Length: 130
Image 1: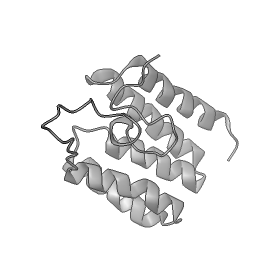
Image 2: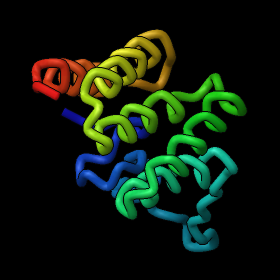
Image 3: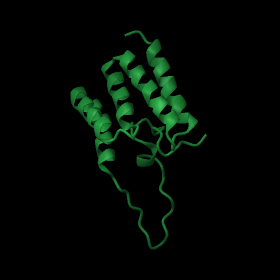
Image 4: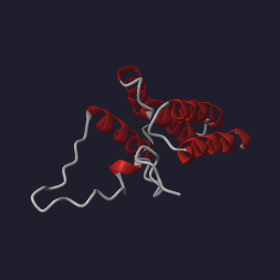
């Protein structure tokens, strides 16, 4: 199965596949590949770093900003799920992974693998005892 551009990177970095391990198309001899990082990318990519540093409150504030400023993007929901999972709040993490799966089902650009990943993650966390 092929990993979609907007799916979580299979390497486990927490970033989207397109911003992590996806190899850019071969450039023409005259063109250099360019990467355009948007405000959304910069905000979203800060969350996994803050989680690794144990700065959950700061990560949660960024998630709130993502939901407020970019409601049409999946990042806020997905990052909230990751924050709650890192905090050990499996119930809330599962809730947000379900919301993320619902979002992915309703929007273009997400394959079945993404939807199933989020649903499976929610089910796994819901089964864990807190």
